[in-house]
Image (cartoon, rainbow, N blue to C red; front, top):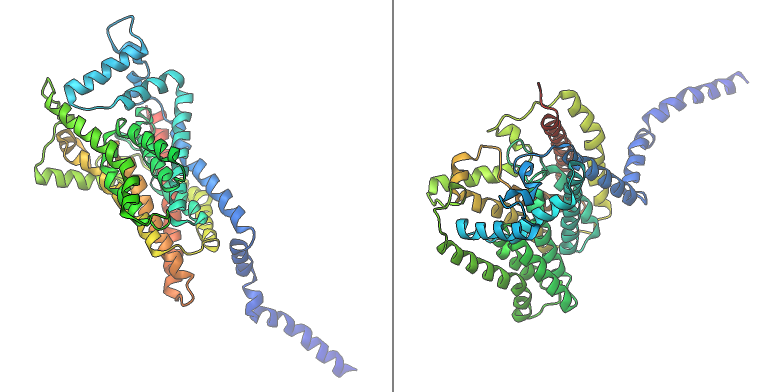
Length: 454
């Protein structure tokens, strides 16, 4: 009897040791967390996280006051000396002034300014409009990458990569000022590409042509994206069922014809300018000045460029705010990026390359006109970008997305190595930390602009 009790006692004493040394039980928490990210709840987790992160990341836009040209532009009819001026007369006057004095054709920008400041006539409604404009633009970019890769799961990492670059600035900033002229241009340009890629009826091609034409006469940078649009149509021709060069060229004509017409008209306008252009619109092709300005404009699209390449001193970021952001922003981003991989059927290398082409083309195009303009060669600070930097935001984000897609594909392959998995998780962590720091920087800048120190 004593021997039996001793054996039972020994078994009881070794149970905790057996549990402690059992690797299955030891890693049960990790297994549960991993199953949550790869199981049936992964889709709900990713969508909840991306919605939360996108809304929170863009909220600082709403905090900002009227800045720069907005302080005057919000009263368009009073811009002229005519007390009987109307919205239409101001539109005609300003459009004609741009054409005759600067050789620029931007009726879309003039009409948008008048509409925005007439309809959104308080700071709160105006900033809310800019907030939703950025949100819609992010969604359209996500839909475009989803269409290019033919993988719905790509939408989530696209949105998160965009949040990594969407930055408020202490210098010229088109996100929270200038009546959303650049975000509208980017939105209409990418929407036209999305329509052409999905075109199954002629009306979709017509609508794409209209959106593209409007973007061309709203902000000039759009015309530089014409080769990128045509290249994307060529790379995705098989997905669209286009088997002949003629069928591809027909769709490319949606972008080529309006761009050619607009470009020729602007060239003619430049020959008809009645006064000497001011430095803001004068071209200077000095190689060194162009190269330096081009690099500054491109670098401004990189995350946190105001801090690691400072030309205008940004406000200091409190360390405590960084810690809070890493927990409440970075953690959901990292979880969503990892969970998104579980629902991702690996896209083709051609699809990943197409995403990279759109990204690189957008990034490079954002710097061309700024680089050749005399005023920005003389005044553009390091780490800051002029308004077209928003195209750069989209470009850098899509380049980052293409890296994520490639690493996700490598890490889930049958013969994936530990290095591939480590690289994927490291990239997710890098994106998560960068999104957190970008949000903190945006929040700090918005607070400084709204509540300047006495």
